[in-house]
Image (cartoon, rainbow, N blue to C red):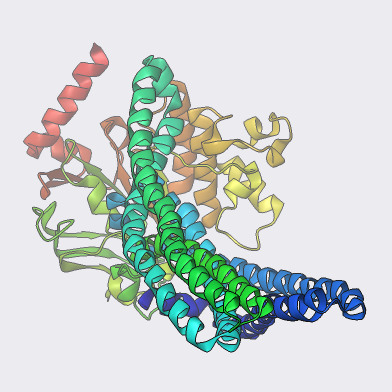
Length: 576
């Protein structure tokens, strides 16, 4: 089975523990057979023959058997659960590592809640399967041991009884398929449910501002009901399997009781033999029920594993085409050569025939209406996406020839929506940068005009700023991200509308911080406010994915109708 082969890759290093667990399972199975076997000597040798000496010994034998069974069952269960935890932890680690390295277009197609569901719910179902696989094997050993007792006590009747037992497998197989189907659909609905939760909690301020709690409640309720619907269907099949098995088993047992009872009445068998035989038969049904439950859990896990391994097998076009050269972008020209780009094969081109050079150490602005392709343009530089046609070069080297992580270490990004982690100010500024002293962090904060407000925080640089920096204002968050970029000290800088969400006072402070950040770097600035890019060395006007005009502010006011229109619209807005 493909599912088990994939799982084995994560558990084979624990094979010694697995082998020990199997050995302990054999011992447990042997004790089950022993319990059924001692019924014959107890009835025939003690009660019928009234042997008091053997009666005194028998309680010790019974306690000893159950003591051995209990000890080795505990060891077997503990070892397999330990193996399950360790192996599944590796699956979870690999899944997270795979997801976090996937390109941005993957995250555009997959929601956060769905990915969270993969790492939590799906992996947990796989963990349950590991334990149930061994439980199933242990119960198979038990069935073999009990079958041996049955055949030993009465080979003819035992053969008849064992012929009936395989019929129990039929509902196990048929129902297992249904359980896998509905479990897989249920997990998909759980991913949708996680999406709703993540979206609602992230946008709780908007929900409350628009008094939309009832709508969100109804949306959650609808998704929750869909999830419950599939869970109930799975439960129907799950719960129906045991009664069906018991019914089939009861029919077989009834026939065995009648035929075996006749043999005892006719003197062809002893009561001890018959009851030992019957004990083994009755005990055999319990392992079958446990195998059925284990199969149901395994089928649910297979559905989860298909979802998990689908992500694990997703191609990473960027890293699969990683370059071999280290990137050193200091004092290097950046050039776009016949660049075309579209997000997928069936989409239209977002960028078309882009040919332009950017000199080292210059400030370059990208302007244009919404949808003109500005963000796509700059996302190609750190290889968040690869060009569909043409090439982008740093110096004379194509971006695709550089190691991805080496390339990105040369690029700093400050975006419109500054993202901060629920950690201290220091660790947010030093994020992703190793071997940094506290003084380096302070110097970067001072250059970003952030030092003063940081020292006013309750614990200064060690203040935990909350999820997404909720304890800070927009301008403060932006200055911390600028300090982060200053500390990284990259030769290439991308500013994606870094001041568009700020008020006038905050924008002035942030603009000063950006001026410090942009010194001696090749900078790319996206800005809706043309006042922030008037002094750029080169302004690129994009229109419908193409370069319409390039030049300085004064030149474009003379030559570019698009730029003049954008500028006049903003002047009018400012006047109003």
